[in-house]
Structures are given as C-alpha cells and as structure tokens.
Image 1 (cartoon, chains in turn purple, orange):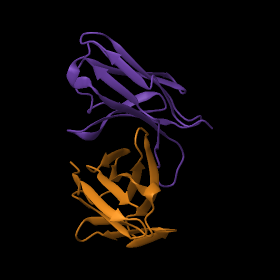
Image 2 (cartoon, each protein chain N blue to C red):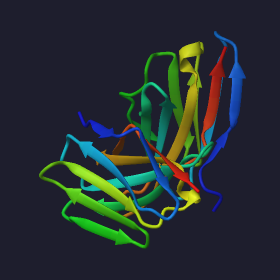
Image 3 (cartoon, rainbow over the protein chains, first blue to last red):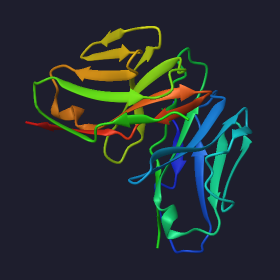
Image 4 (cartoon, helix red, strand yellow):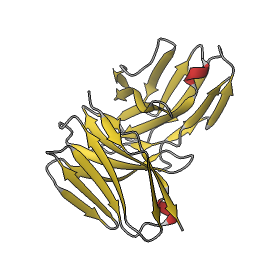
Amino acid sequence: DAGVIQSPRHEVTEMGQEVTLRCKPISGHDYLFWYRQTMMRGLELLIYFNNNVPIDDSGMPEDRFSAKMPNASFSTLKIQPSEPRDSAVYFCASRGLSSYNEQFFGPGTRLTVL
Amino acid sequence: GEDVEQSLFLSVREGDSSVINCTYTDSSSTYLYWYKQEPGAGLQLLTYIFSNMDMKQDQRLTVLLNKKDKHLSLRIADTQTGDSAIYFCAGCATNKLIFGTGTLLAVQP
C-alpha cells in the first residue's frame, strides 16, 4: 500500500484565493482526519470523518474552511478565501481496524498564503 | 479538555540514552502514544502504551507511564544520528488524538 497520499505537497497562493487540499486515505480505512501544524499552535485536529460522514468539526477555525469526503477513497479540505494566517502544514491521516487506534499520516501539504 | 506538555528541546551525544518527558491532564485515554516526525515528513507512530501498563519495552525504546503523576516518558537507548527528529506524545479522547507540543531531539555525532 502506498500509504496516505496528499496533494499538492506545496501550495503558494495569494490572499483571497481559493485553496483545495486533497487526501487519499489507505484503502480499507474508515476514519479520516485533517490536522493543521503551525509553530504557534502545534498540531491541531480540524475535522474527522467516519465512513465518509463528518463526526467532529469543532476544530475547523472558521466558515472559510470546509471539508468533504464524497467517497471512501478521497477527501478535500477547502479554504475560501485564504488568508496569510492560514499558512501552515496540513496533514491528513487515516485509521482502520487497529486494536490501539493507530493513525497513519500523509506527508502533508505546506501551504503558504502571501 | 486535554492538555499535553513537553519540553521543547533535547540534545544528546550519539550512543547516549535520550529521555523525552510528557505530562498530560486527562487520564481517560485508553492508549498513550509516541510519534516521530522527521524534517519535511508526516508523523509516524513509534510506540504506544496501554493505560493500565507501567512500562513497555520495544527494542531500543522504553516507555514509562506514571498514571498517578500523569507523566509519560520515552527512553531511547544508544541514540543514533538517525533518531534526530521531533517527538510528540499524544493521548486519545473519543477518536481524537491530542498532541503535545513536541520535543526536538538533536543527536550530536
């Protein structure tokens, strides 16, 4: 298995533009998580899905952020409009049947908003 | 909610042991975890411990859990330059991982 796949790996955009981050979880995993990592706030959980259904989006910072999971093999995190304070590394992780709830992380998308 | 604290930086010499410490506030996590993040990469699970255990050993890694003091530690024996990374402890609350602030481990040759 290729592991969790994220694209793009790097994104540079201008303030006000729409940004879409993509994630393909590990096949067979039924949980998908979106995290944001910054120097100031560390690693924060934004939202997670179970069987494609959003379960907890309490970490989504504002209405400018939205996430979807149209099927078991694809999820998107969208920021519209983007702002410089959204600059961060965004990680996707997935989890399957595991006795100890291990989450597998993707390589991340480094977002820079100018 | 859960709060997880770690020291920010640790520097050791190659071949020495490293001990990374973590304190947490919520004792309801069934498992506690140690993740490793190498530069430019995602997080990778290193090891975990069940909350009713005091110690777990896995090759060069030893995890100690003191539930009374809500203290978790990770010991890396014979630390190598390849161990240089950021180490995160994490608890799990209703499917959500709550991460510590991360400890940057620098291994000097």
